[in-house]
Length: 574
Image (cartoon, rainbow, N blue to C red; front, side):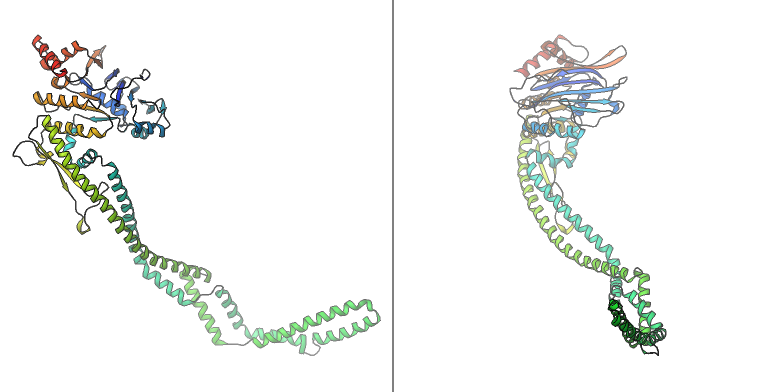
């Protein structure tokens, strides 16, 4: 593609300037430059006009498929230049993506059969998600079957909000809903958890009380084992202690008695040889230590007794600990740890009750905050709905439906006794109603609107909604479905009027619409060397007359048909 051209609309509207398509479906090589105002594309059915729309959709971030690649080629390429001068939101988006912040956006997207699809914006690689964010609001495409979407009430609320420019209010409601929804889910999860725990609560309480009644002490099991061992061998211990005491102190020739004789003899030695006084001191220390040991043995003997009742109590306690240990961990330390865990778990259950109360209060507060915002949004929607009804009826009158009545019906889905059903987009459901003829009751579009009426309603809504779109390019792919004659001419006038504030690209089969185009392009299919390819040509005045005559007259074009074509062209220009 050639370098972006430095030209800007005097109307200061964003436009699709250049479009290049290569090896896309039946398009081999195609390049077209669009202008401000109303651009019309005409041509025989199957020439590839709607394929161009598919190519543009690809640049806006639609899903790519290898089936889009022209047969016999390895890669399809679509490029476009958009002029977005004085459009701060696009400049900000480009800055956030680290792209050149010029007044033009060059998007290039390739689809390769090997799966290596690539996207470039101003020659910088971007992801599909980044492309979708950047391209939002560049172009609004109304496909030839889009009017059928109007039959779906689910989209009506969004159209109403768009017309009323209620985006900020809708975001407030959505945020309030999100906060309420998160709290509601957390509360439900807490309650489910409590229900699951309820089945375990009695058993946990029994275990806790059983361990609590045991009055466990750290190290108790080891202490009791030692005490039981002493009680079982009391006689042996007493006999051994008495024997040792006799040998050391009371018996004939006891150690302390003999040691006193030794000490006496050493005293004689020291008196003669003072240098050996250290021996006497060592003997004195030894005698004192032995005497202390003898006294300790005596005290120990006094504490030894055979107590069958105490032994029974100790053995019973150890049996209890052994029984509890099989259930709670083997050792007293493990049982104490389990006891503390059960205590924390039961306390957590009490905490859960407190949290449930707190979360219930929070949920009610958030519920009321949401309802306050949703009620405010609902009131604004009703005011907007009245204005939308009047504007649609006025626009439909310009499109040859002067007696049509348009309305918006509000409904609030109920959710039992809890009040309005909560939703991210508020508490309203809306449906568009239509009475196309006098005396007819207003009914949902799906029940009363014909294809031609739906096409005009779609055009009316697009015309009204476009006021809030900061001049985005509007593409209409065969919006003339189901209409003709006078109605088609009125649709052409409406498109021309819409082109005063937007670049409009319209694909049409009707000369009554095509004649209003400021710029006219013919799309044709050519077969060369056994290959089929689509080409697009911008028509000058004479070529336009010939194309309009073809659309008016069919296969054979007479001079009268050409004169008629010139007449409607001059009338549209006048």
